Image (cartoon, rainbow, N blue to C red; front, side, top):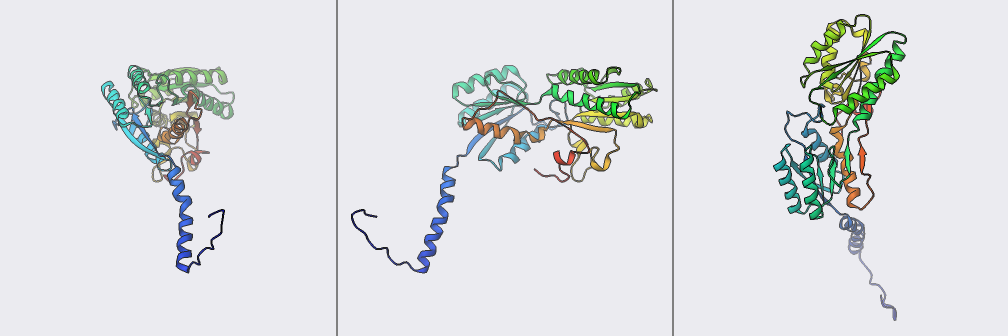
Length: 344
């Protein structure tokens, strides 16, 4: 429009009016699409080997990767996946590929401290930001489990159950799991379980049963433990869900179900199940002696990590350490954490 003069607008027909309205409606959507930045994010997984269980728990690399695939669907993110395969050469080659592709951010899940240090150097030189998962990468924010908190939740749950249910009765504690192959995660869990039980149930003697990486050994070990404690209530802290189920089978075979409570670590599908699975932790199974399992949520990592990555890319402040939001999953809250139908 000219300021100096005025020109009457032409009379528009019905078709022209409709076309103009459609164009006006389309403008905000087009502008929104143009303004929305999509980021290319690499995720280098610890391993994609389906036979490897991560962090001493019942999750695989496939579970972790699937969570990133699903989480990315609702975010302005294009994922590029790598398999570090617990191999230093592959880990470094993956980092080099991410740099060559000029990705916007790199998520590193690797338990090799030396490789992580080298990846940090290469990424810093390339100007590619890094977010670490579970194992530190120098200079990168870290997301991962708080093993001491997870252990404390289990110990406190067992003590709380014993004090409420068997008040005044003698109790014996068994901490059972893979103690021989102590990684970075196990000692913190074990010591926190033991400390919480000592604090809240000081009179209960504690025994550690080492399955040496073979959960099937838990059954024989628990039978011997139960036989040696005929007059005690039995509190069992299992370091993973498979071991917990083996311990449960042993107690059932020994006829000690009324005297036993078990709390586990992990809360994988073997105990909470899917929509068609038998569920050990379930509102309809409140009598189970597996009274709870501490969730590590490895199958939800994508939903926790990708929002952190986006905050980094948008130059927002990200804490140097973001712990997993552990929770004790029981029959009372399992449907809140893991709904009865498989939804993401």
